[in-house]
Length: 174
Image (cartoon, rainbow, N blue to C red; front, side, top):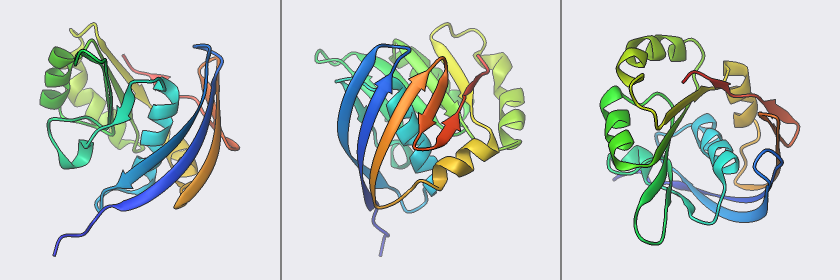
């Protein structure tokens, strides 16, 4: 019998001073059985960084045709495709061809350096691609916030994200 996703509820208050976006979101996050708390919380971080009326969680880990998050406008055009982790080059290339903007939020200690060393050359040609990384400590600190029911306040200011006492400053790789 297949394992089912675990459902998490998050009341997320976003105050993004960099973009001038202020909103509250009541989110239901399905954590796939193979997904860690760290990955789920990085998805929540990605949501907070790119929050808007059309941003939604995709099937991501369980579906090759959808990202972790995406913004699809009412006419069906994919405005933003967001991946978390270290997706393979082919997946990123396909995303860059499908979406106006692609964002990868990588995490995972030194493995990110190895992954980026392998894919950076092939991905340098994509002008619509942004790649960001979190440190191992930032990822672990986010994972420590995971609870089945969460009330999270997120403030984004000058590139630093303050997530209920956890400060995260994603580093841009591309």
